[in-house]
Image 1 (cartoon, rainbow, N blue to C red):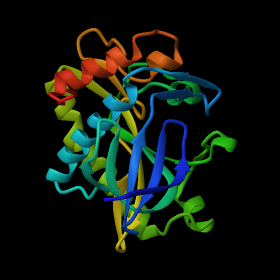
Image 2 (image 1 turned 180 degrees about the vertical axis):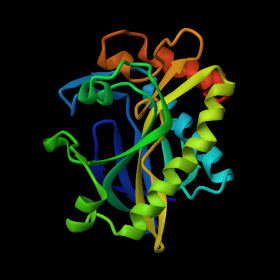
Image 3 (image 1 turned 90 degrees about the horizontal axis):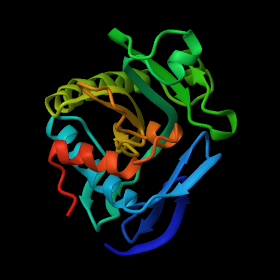
Length: 237
């Protein structure tokens, strides 16, 4: 597959067109950002770790019957993905209270949420990704009711697959965000699943093993990502 023009450059990934209009190349860079791009650093090896981690997770989800845009790894930092018509709404599931939920509702970090919560956020950095509801999404034409229903179903299906996967590796899947798009008329999981877009804690010590290490200045960001990959058996070499 021939890599062609740069289509989109995000905060940590770059998307390229290919000679096949149905497929793109997704490149994971070493850039790391937080607070809607206000804090940015380069962390060696991060692009490689996230690329291979994302491929591993998407393969697990695909095997469980969840449609994903992943096609194959292309290099240490690149993968081939289906070209989706992305829906500008992020789906968030929270198993344990942390992050913005704690700030918004004043609950204690670490509170177990039973059942897990489900939230929608508009993907818009300029507006700081505001929380929205299904009525907003439908009224503004971001998604249809049928699409939202399927996105919610798949988001919880991901939880059913990944929560025990991480727990068996000695980690807690605290929360995560997912993005979806449309391919050949169906809803498909897109973007990525990596420690950049979820919260992972050590099951026993509750040590943070995700991008909160970067947000909170804890250091050892890539080392934590590599530890997560090692526990899951993700091949990084």
